[in-house]
Image (cartoon, rainbow, N blue to C red):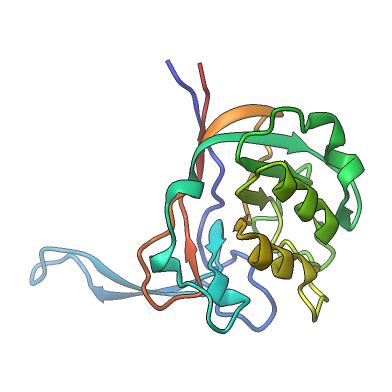
Length: 209
């Protein structure tokens, strides 16, 4: 029987967001009681909360929205590579020993424990040249367990620029704490949000045997 790893962080009021972005909040539009048979919640939060898929609209004025994305890159064979404590950028040497016969999807674990309840301004991001090499090997989706594929202080978003030019899909804020390095099936479908620049996903990995 296949094993499933849930690699999505919990979404709640203390879920970290980029400073100035919209945190999670919830209010009850209706609550169960004598005069009401249901609970109905109204949710407010950034599209980049928790595990999410960046759409090209996030980093290109005329890029595709989350709802217009082809779902194919978000479903299928995937490799998890550990680069724990590699420093501010994931460089090619951190991955080079694990890139033989790469599947089209690569997730990189950089944290011993993903910061699911606090903002970490010093999170690890991708070096743009690493994304270039992954794309050269046929990778179609990259993901990691931090808030962005670019450093928090970046104003040029060089790795996002590579993703746009090479048509790479992006998953961010994954939780890979319990996932051994190796090959899996990824399931992380974005919602059909037709005007949004990103979408939360419920990301899971499933064992191949």
